[in-house]
Image (cartoon, rainbow, N blue to C red):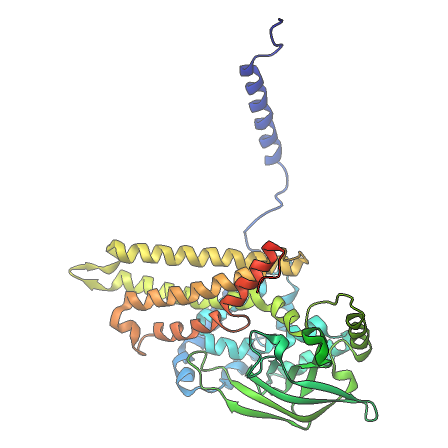
Length: 434
């Protein structure tokens, strides 16, 4: 038997040399992956952080106590270009998808209630942008914001008293009156951010109830022009109290044929395909929620970061038993976990935001992952912050209790934690799990 031409040692040496050569070659190539923000992104983040520090935080307690929409602060945001069509377009235009979550994190770091008053319009804008025609986008999105002199807000109306997580159960109907060339809407919407005070309401309604969620469509209802739309009861909330939430009633509310997003012809074609048993795109409500989940997750991140930073500073100053409380491992380790959880959630948010902006399919429900994680982190971190502050954390003299109240909704709205897990489970298993 002849000896092998090369020994195992020689083979290993050659493999190592090949690996070293490959690494050396790669070192000179242009990087295709980076977590480094661009200078524009850093500048925008710093700009919004300054507004949150100087304008939002000093007013947060006052507007939380008032439980009223902070119109003066919305106007201040409009004056500097933070609130408005052009500003929002700039945030959306970032090809990496990161600017919008960066803006939301900083603004909600300032205060979630005021932040929602400023950013609540974005949900209606997302619906119009995602489903509307070019003409509808040009007409209605600017109206959602109004002008610097006369600011307006927009509202997205999907949920109903008996249709929260289960959007397929909504009862609001839209019938087309061919003789008048108008849609007639009837029903009640619940928990609508800016409901009743918005100039533009985007209403999800059923056009064909037999088709379930696939028979839904989105309609633009201008408050100042449409008859039959009115505000119902304003909700008194646990958190986000500076943000207006109310029921919206539609009683034979009439809007022109062209007020269905995407146009009536496109809607008729889609419904015809569904009736033939063919697949259709996502439901009208779910399209909006899917696009907004990473942004909502970024809002939760802002709350979590605010609570963590405050607790960290407090622990470094507060003395008990002759030393700073951060010198106790129980406190220090908790803060370490808080920081780790926040950073982990942010990476999920950035990934989902980049995927959404780049048109990369959410194969494993990455948008829902970001919302689930960030919501849970906000609740957990704000609760730990209260614990670190002890009795002070439970009083309204300190902001931590407000952040804790604000955080909880991120486990609930725009898809509860349970719904997010259901979406993820279906995506990773390929099965229709109930």
